[in-house]
Image (tube, rainbow, N blue to C red):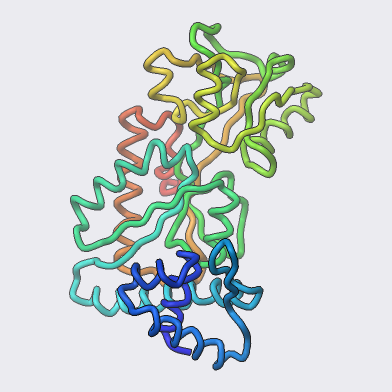
Length: 312
């Protein structure tokens, strides 16, 4: 087994086709097939199967894919750390954001990295908090933003921002704060379980003996906002997730109180994993971006970064 075989194998699985992988990797297809045959022979197992829907990994192939990604990532990190002895951060940095964090922070971060760290290649991936947690634990991310992190043996976490949650409704709705028990009887549009936001709402509902009605389950933030704007129902979100629509009068927003609903955003990275110079530089840039966004009112919430620094 060698690194080239692993790269070829990952390329085939990602593309679902030997032909497409050969084109993407700029390798002749016979050479690609030859390397995969040698890889399978060396391991003594079949890694790929061909079918009407393309090439799929076997159970052994799926396991190898998971390890191969980590192996190649560590090789890339080692290469970057050696190269960065020159003093200029360079190489790939992969960051994971939830949809609402990506909405407010992804573009400013990309702009700052492009301007200040021209030799860094930034990859931003977006998913649910639980998925980002899995990617962090699998060492697939340099760092990621997730919600309400408890003490973890596998992650190092920094508190970033505490956000209030709002009842988001159609345009022209009532204004002012709304008590949590007034959510009873409203048709809510929420993500399906398991989801940090959904879990928090249902936990408070149990604690306050409030019956909440989830009329629609949908896991896309853009779709949730569109349905709310069209009057299909209500949702519960941080105001940062609907800032543009709220300012444009496309949705209404009421702060939830009695009890208040809040969640904290944390910046996490795998405990014990090597940190490249590029990743460290992107982290510092991101923390500055967060301070600027909160300070400028573009990310409504309480900045927790400086509170932690003062307490330490």
